[in-house]
Amino acid sequence: MLLTTLGFCLSGYLLPWSQLSFWATTVVTTIPTAFPVIGDIICNILRGSENVSGATLNRFFALHVAFLPLLLVSLFALHVFLVRRVGISAPPSGSEEPNDWREFRHESHPDGLPFYPYFVSKEVLMTVVYLIIMFAIISFVPALFIPADANTPADPFNTPEHIRPEWYFLAPYEMLKLIPNRFLGIALQLVLVMVFILWPFIDTSKNYNILKRPLLLTLFFVTIVVWVGITIWGSF
Amino acid sequence: MQRRGFLKLFTSILGLGALGAFAYPLFRFLLPVESAAKVKSITLPKSEIPVNTTKDLMIGGTPSILVNTKEKGFLAFSKVCTHLGCLVKYDQERQIFICPCHAGIFDLEGNVVSGPPPKPLQKFAVKVEGDNLVIG
Image (cartoon, rainbow over all chains, first blue to last red; front, side, top):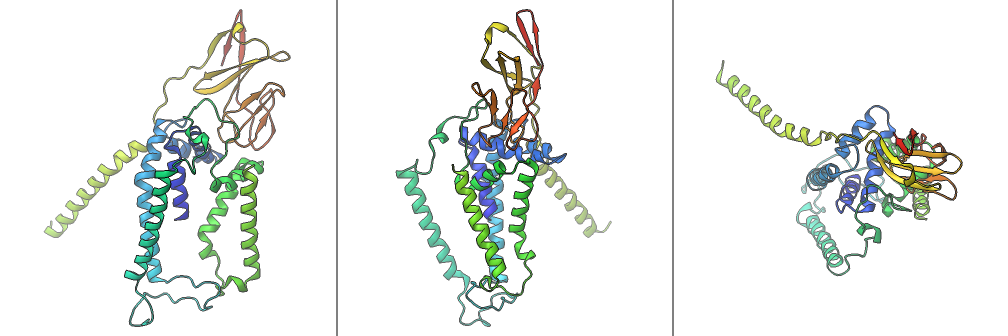
């Protein structure tokens, strides 16, 4: 769901057709070309033409309003299903016993709360709070999160000076700058994403409590510190 | 044929037809469009590019730059950085090309000086024919 949200950020970024969005999309759609044979094909399919053009805008719009919402809703449904079927991970300080793979049954958990209406109402409350904040920003301070360059119309013949992505993509951006080999720079990031996605399957330890796993805890903090550090570095 | 078998076959065919009716436009939509015919070479009067100046051009659908230097004469390169496709800028003072996206630097021959680009800039042939230049 996080990656799908980043997909929303990326596909929606092109839609204003500004200098920032045009060149960000050019960079992102060029990334697959680092891989031999299929790279150029993927790049062409993503763009819909040789360069970022109206065809790219067309398919990114479709991605943004048709494909990704469907995907996100499906993932959300799967998430709720798994919460019901498997249960929620215990916090590190909580029980060390992993949850059994069983469906929630009020009869066997008389002290439990059913998902509806208790948790649904919490979700709805948070959604309403988010919508209030979002519409307040859109109505009263629409330029709060919009950099000045975002209003410059796209110019396919001029890459703006000191172009940088949004803060959440600064770390991958800086890594691409730092790693001298294009293939390695991109492949490393793909591997990191795959490890992130597959972590529940990779980590087979019986001990769920990260506070009692010093190596994993250290790795976690080092990753966070490195990621934040590279993000800050990328902003200069 | 049994009625059950016939219905299975019939609904399968209908289902496949419906799937095809959905998949074909999707396939057509995803198919990259053919680019328009490209100009392979450009002819320009030499007088348009005095020494120590540059001119932006489109050669074969690629944003390109023509540089006229005192030492090396006329040089033409694709402006597309070989790293991730941003357009390089020419630094007249240092006589290098700099990519504003990931700080790739190329020399006046188009070779990578520093940064992550994997290969040199694409170079175009420049021929002097009388008072004209033929690029590409």
